Length: 510
Image 1: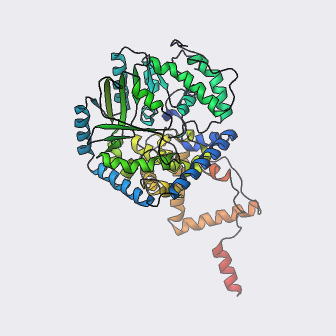
Image 2: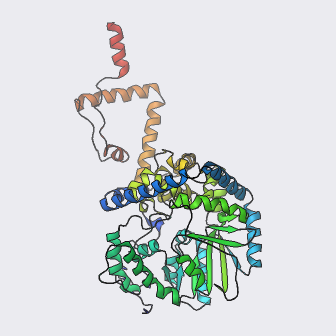
Image 3: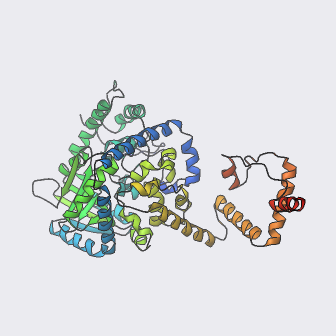
């Protein structure tokens, strides 16, 4: 059974589209900043339950697999050293990778930003005369918002990873790096499949249950027709080996293998930091990544391909090395350490903030600690979304302990908070009322604490307030900054006299 590609309006805000649209059109950057988005996400009880169950399961599996590895800390140290060496000599390794890839028959492109990367993908697809592509799960292409760009160009981009398929058919956005649909349960997945599959291809069986094998089989049948007719595939890349010109894809389902086998053309969008010096270095990361990401000893599918082989796999291959803010991060002596990230998401699974708010609150495809540390460096701290992310953290340090490449998240986040403060000081009149309130509070504190007479005036005002309140606790009040604090806690009664006055009186009596 084959379904023709057609434009659909149902579920797409009344707009005819080839692919499902998120409920809130636009990019992640158009979302509210964390402090506002978190309020909404915390109110979704089902999501909080789903997140708690899923993250608990993953981190328990990780802990079990790590306990089996007596050389775990040595592996972490080795991975850190390899990634640091790559950062110091990134230009050399990238040029070596380009030379090796070209020797393997690969077309190499360079993209300064997301726009250029998207344009190259679209150009390749149009040159092949196709109106659809299949995709291997790729956080990099989500970073560029490639699917939306291709939709505008009249090209349908189909996600083939099961979790990504759930997100796409659900008119949703991913909330996790490794498990994009972590915020959904089996009941919700069943309803999505029943309601949406029929609009974009083979429908799900009407009697489908919540049983995972049945849901998985429905996804396989739905995707099969897309795999069979697809002429172009799009991927990311976990690693690029400079010495052999090999691209490495690590996955759990086999959909990546399908994209590497059936389509005639493969386009891979890879961040410039993903290069590794040699094949020998890959061994370290293939031990760290599955244990940290999904709690497995090894991934079911580790695909490595080195260019074009006649009669086997894609006959035309393109690799796009994308910067998109990475060199800006590399220029920061402390911030650059975040570029060691291998996208395992162990920091997400351990984070108490992420577990409760979910990934959508971060306004980015990179949620959790890695999102809070990476996004402001890739995009800057001028936008309220990115400006608020360094504060989406309690600085508990759990992410530091589980990171397989030893990224010092808490140090980077404190550093970024300093950058945010400097940026806010540059704003004469902040557009964000919360920022304006915080700046006003800091100015008031500076005035009060910078002069003894001013401090005495504040004390007298506090004593007067204490007499008026008559021992009552201070609850929520509709004042910026104070409202966020007092909404979730009460302040004890305001004293009617200062400690200095109390001490002076009692010392004289004794």
